[in-house]
Image (cartoon, rainbow, N blue to C red; front, side):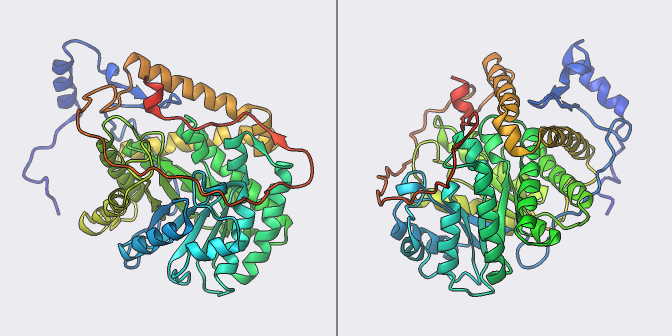
Length: 473
């Protein structure tokens, strides 16, 4: 319908005239900005300066829900974690991301099959998918999760094996990191026979984002991890198409809506390019997790706005799965209120705002198409540099990844220091509201199993997580 038919069409010349008056003589080029990696963001896009659309298949928006609303659960006590899982599913979540921490530090204390069964008591895995985030315990947790599913072939299990992210974050592996990748692939190939619907690996780039890296660096890390895991699965006996089909790609989304949308769209472009080069073409499964580095301790209530923007960006950018963290994550463990808010933000955008009814709402928008184009090309350059170094393991151990992420993190710190970047509630408009309530958790010590493998430990420079708020202070 021609909604604008009753209004005269504005011309670029008219826009420029108005902007010149506003700028009071300053050149319009002063409105041009750049991403942290130096990609140009113009103040106005037209057909003349826009990049051509990149070819990819948008996320399918079919069925009752346009995306999988996933609840993040990480309480150290398996029994309390179980209560939170059941409440999340009853409250509108469709699946669960179970974050496991050794001995209950930074996650649920799941140290054997019995603890896994206790955490998932009452969960019907044929209906609600269960995904894992277990670090180097991932291999053992995958076996415990498989045991809890009781060999039901329709179980929707997402083992999310990802030893490369753990290696990058920790800066070391208990035993050779290559052996961890191979062991995970061998176990995953076996599990794929029993659970044909399972996702075996998660090729995640969030470790780069949380360490202060840029969008292109994050995309390149995720794609290089996907290639490494696909090679390992093929060596373990899976056909190439099944190997790529068993890998999900995980990316962070933050409050920069257009840039996060473009990043997810660029991931589809890169996946299409890589799978085609490997002789198979499969749609990518994109899993978006809200950024941790964007959350603040000061004026923590503003985190609700940040999470809402991140969720909108993930949905409009075409994420198949979206998980939001708690708005109190920078302060401590979430209360039931904070957990409910993480679900309700998604439910409101999904069911009341109707976000997700359009397969690719950014298509045709010159700004979104241009950023998608530039990000895809920049990420491809980063990806080929990683592959030229040998593979992702070599790029990590040589310091290539750490050097690039370090440069980007330094640029973030400089931008915050000079005021070019602002954080509402921290550097600007600091509020005086009382902080939200949080829960103080005591780790449950239960004797975590040793995830080590025979051979010397591998080492690299760790991609330690940061918070933008801390960089600004």
